[in-house]
Length: 274
Image (cartoon, helix red, strand yellow):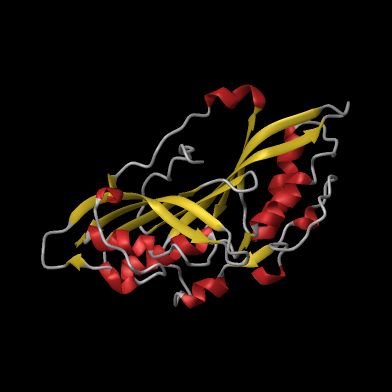
């Protein structure tokens, strides 16, 4: 199903009893085809969703709350449109369950079916909320650079690297990533971390390129894949990982990670803006 058929930008009824059919899957391949991605993907990775507004009733009718982390593999055929995800989570609000394990089972079953692959879910109970800390993405801050900017749509031709010099191993970070929802045009704010080994990337032009998403309409996952593909094609690093932490909207934050080399998965630590 295409994004324009989703609940985005349309009046919605908030159903408060368990309704798994509210989930609206969208195939990844249409947007990947725009990037020329067919067949084997040039990356692997995950989309890390954090859901802060989860509530249900115990068998005595008392409300229960939790935070959930949902990890979706990047090679799943579908994503789930975020408003439909929120509507689905709200459908538990007046639903009686035997306990967190029952909720976990339903989430695992429904979301795996929607994305077409096995998702991993962790529930954080109320008595563990105090263990959830804050952190920031590690790396050299690109935002320190004093640059002129005139382009606010993605311009991969801005990207360049020093192919005639020795390769470097760098981690770069910017908090100036902003894109817009593919359907509604609402702003999505994020921070992005770029780890790479290869010809040194021109940092000023990389920052200009990232700022260039400011008036671009695409979902979070699609923006990160576009950044990955553009850097690979224009700068040709041997190793590359792109990780974005987007701010919360509707009680959800979405944090895509794409990489072409083995190593530890990104740490799911909430940033100050999230």
